[in-house]
Image (cartoon, rainbow, N blue to C red):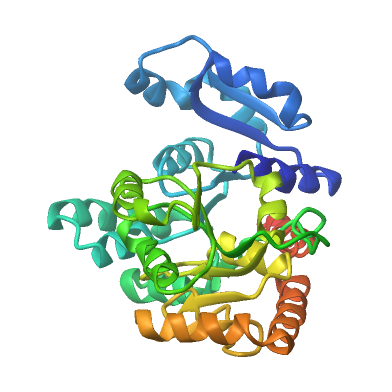
Length: 346
């Protein structure tokens, strides 16, 4: 994940944008200095108690904040400190949101008190932000609807894919199916395992989560068909995608799933649940396949795509075109750079 952020801000540096990361970590964060150069880093090098450090952030880095043209928060968590610094130093504020926390918790049936807390936080942040960056038009519409925010300040910039890394590679296909994601209920990973339990297929499951131990025990009889990997560095994922015939994303809901975009960028045919965040990327039977969220339909679609090489080739070609036209690092960086320039010049 850090490598993705570094690549983005290094590309912005080439356009003349200097970036400083203000982190909540201790002195060990400075060990990243060489890796992330020319990005600068400010952290809790004094090892102050967390609450004290958070209160003192606006004072500890006065020079950095005074000289900044913009203040940006990359996610909701920690954004309240960006809001405070923006207010104290009278700097434009950009809030970037990869996912709407309140909506996610609402879908998961979170405690109402907990949900109210995040609704209040989101409303406050969005109210005082100069620009809000989200990854999908669905998120933009949801924010406008929930918090009566002027849609003109909400900019849609989707997740990017580094297509110099995530690209088709000529290699032997070892796995019939690959799953990449957290092993949590909302990601619905068990549906993939239920599918291969009825088919003579091999699956690669990459990810960790609270369901992992239970799933491994429940499907222990399929050990010869399942390979489990806890985590893989982002720049090593392409070799696993390319060793797989198809990619499945069975989530109950998504925002702008990076793993789906990564698989498509590698030319791997994707099968996804027909739900929010997936069906906005997959055009059924054009650049991917959608199933109706049932096990029987998923099994049917897996059989169809594995047995039809022409469909696989067509989907692969169209998926690659989608990525190159809409989800490249260059396009993402240029759109955000234009946003910075407009805001800094006002």
